[in-house]
Image (tube, rainbow, N blue to C red):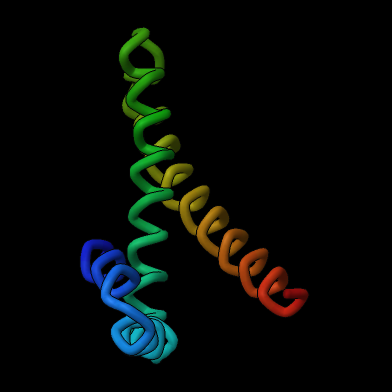
Length: 92
């Protein structure tokens, strides 16, 4: 989708308006929401793995707590990013 979006920008206003209307649809927004959650999940889990690389957090209780912390932090970051994005879009 990223490559298609970049190609649409390069192809002109008609192609760009087509992809823009797709991303503005319900399915497009759900896809963007899923991709943004995946991005934040990957970021948070990468931080978790950095702690593992230095030898911290291998106790089973800590593994479960940090796993749930990654899920919750990813949800909070995703919702925050979307709320900030919508708030900024209203001001533009």
